[in-house]
Image (cartoon, rainbow, N blue to C red; front, side, top):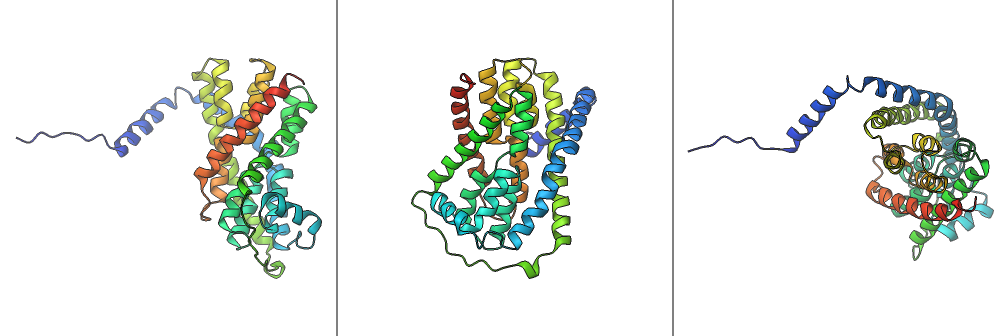
Length: 306
């Protein structure tokens, strides 16, 4: 006797979850709409001005080999991180320009065979940082102290550098002769790529803004939200942590975690620009979590002193 049974397959589970989400959208439409509006304002006032021009500039710097004749900077970089000097541009873009410029430059250098894959996998960890303007002026302003923003920025860079130095122990620098690509550099192509990447970044940000808008309705515990939001998106997490709903030292420490980890929104952006390079996104995620936890511990200590 044959009994007809229905298998509970992953595809059926996805269908059930997506159907549930589709049914819940009308219920949480206002919260989602408010989140998206906040995301649009963030894109217009912060993300696009900070990302678009610097993406074009980073492509020009990499294409013209700006740092080829600057051993004053490139030699210490190689000795400290055990990464070929061709990675210096990516590191500086990550330090001064913010997410996801460091990852984008790393991907371009790897695709141009200027770095080995091992170097790129290590470089992308400590070159993925928030911009100083965002942390010092934006987050520092929300926390009511520019000094706190400066400390957050320095803690983020320090913890990233420590991870980079630890990963570089025992590694050999690859000797890759970089070909000057000035004759092949195309401003039109650079502008088009920058526009597309900026659009992708804003799309991820809007997705997470909508999700955070709904979560703000579903989760009523400020403490739970304070620990959950830093895993999602750094901007919304910083704004919530600065609202005074939890103790200041803990809020400062969680801001440090969010800044060093970056949030899943940033991780998806970095995964997009690293697509096709062979760089391990899983390794990137795990090491950024470690960096975030170290930054949180350091910030928790300094938080009682500020």
